[in-house]
Length: 213
Image 1 (cartoon, rainbow, N blue to C red):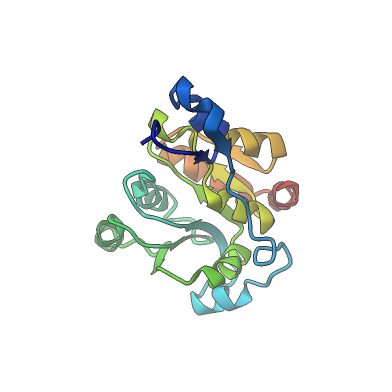
Image 2: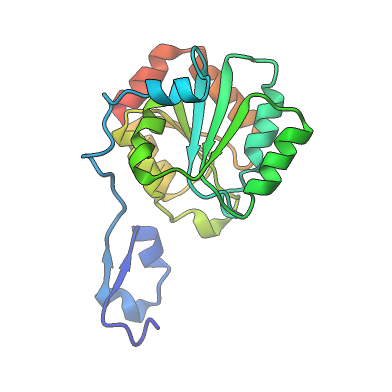
């Protein structure tokens, strides 16, 4: 496929470096970005908070695929750690091969601090981001994903929200450069719980990181 292609596009320099040397001259980097006509820091998330009974809650948001690459079981484990902190709620927007398993796990453990809302239209995502206090980007601990630049990262930044990411690589380097979030250990529920709690207890830092994004 590489040999016969007229041109190749990739979303990050890291992906380009992993391609065969013979393809470099016909490879172009086209990073993901944010739709600034949709995602803005001054959008109201009040409607989402009312719909899901999130008044006065510190909302940790994830939007996107619930698949193997994301290792989203971390949300269940983190919610279990924080189950006694009634002010923190995890809001999970999206679907995927693990959604049914995750909802069953949450029900089995009687977790009331995690809400799965399923798929929602792209046009509603700005409101979900606006309703959040912090946004989370989880990945399975694998070198395969270190060169990815998830589009949700740019949506979160454009929406003015701090980000917690758990994978070193291209995405976390951007977050570090922008000083708009925190990098935590991979697939570590306690680290995620600590990071969410730290931002909840420091609203000034939360706002500062969001503005930096």
